[in-house]
Image (cartoon, rainbow, N blue to C red):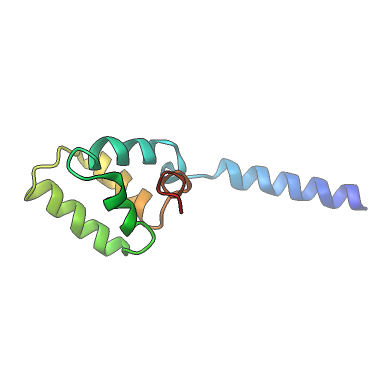
Length: 97
């Protein structure tokens, strides 16, 4: 009985792990470091991780791209938005959270 329970847990866990989204890939932290640190220290961005809402990040990304000239493609912007709110595990790790 116990073995059956363990097998069920393992199978369910494998299904959850396989259903991860782009926002949980290592690309998140790499993209954050590549694009955001062009103008900011990583610490400045990391202060906002976990604090700023999705709407707040959307506004910030829009402002950085349109008014500050950040060179971020539309697909990178979408990925960053998904990575920052809620923060992806690799973003949390890079930011020490």
